[in-house]
Image (cartoon, rainbow, N blue to C red; front, side, top):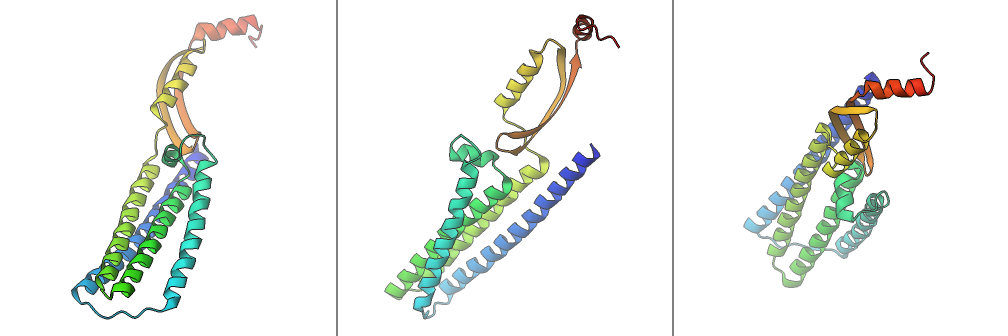
Length: 216
């Protein structure tokens, strides 16, 4: 029990600092990006673009899209349900990577379009609005990750139908009188930690002992 509590405490601490780190980066990035967009809107100025900007954005899009694809496969290969169902119970690291890269891909696409339209029209408002959109996406992911890791820190119970199935299995055992306490926690897709306190039927146990001649 001590080892289990120590391992759980270490995991909780890891998720806590991961949450602080991820949300700090996202909120800081969101704040700076939104500020840049508002400043560009209030104080329009001529923006100079280089062809290297487009190449950097294209390379970034390919890299982020590949990482997003790997995160998607990681979530899908451990479960047989739909992606949205697996996403609810997958490994938290895979979920975080998926959300981060999903927003990164959207952000790069928005940046490419806003820069292209600014260059095409000469209107700096496209660049300003693009910055605000990207900053809002970053802030949204920060809130999402914060809420997700909060659930992992306090522990998530297994689905109700799964819990009822396990209880039914226990109560169908001839040696079990009743279930006194049942606690559960989701570790990964299809992987749970369950703590169950039950009351045994004494006469059923003694009957089996006599049948097996195993009183010693």
